[in-house]
Length: 184
Ligand code: FNR
Image (cartoon, rainbow, N blue to C red; front, side, top):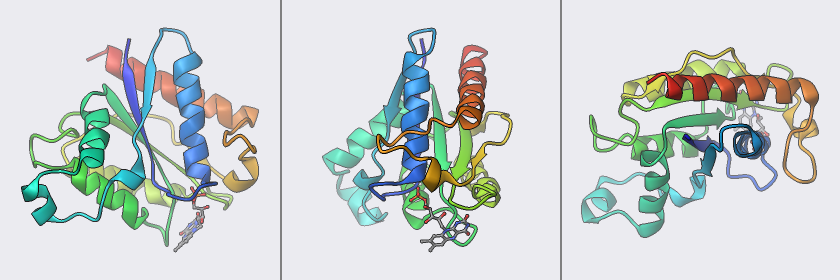
């Protein structure tokens, strides 16, 4: 049984990236194998500050970090802001990259996808997120690209994605990540 940490790069209450994360959680928890998903709360990462780091991490940040360090893999769903990840996502990944060389990200299998209201689903942000993760020592899981286009209109009032074509791509990504964890 594996535990997969999930991180959305948007704070917005009706975020389409968070809807993708909620859908991934459902797929993982309701799929075969009794796997678990843990959603990492983006809001619990304060602006990165080495003084805060040296003084001791706030409890909420420590708990968010523990969700990642206790997981077997991490899936990140990123919005594109002017072609780059949101500042708050970069900030969270900076926290998770600490301490360098021995952080929760070190060697952790990671997969990246994106969602946006545009047709391309913010696909152009993905290489940047993968580069940040690689620079932080994470391991990349080779997956087919998943970029959820028209994502705001696909979000249901329950905060999920139910479009069959997208669900099928998300399920394949989950299977690929679980297979990578099993192969370690
Ligand atoms: C955007 N958006 C956007 N979308 C996109 O596909 N490519 C882009 O480069 C950008 N750039 C961008 C910059 C800024 C500053 C904002 C605020 C927005 C639109 C963005 O994808 C949209 O707001 C999404 O809804 C954000 O994701 P959530 O909040 O739905 O998860």
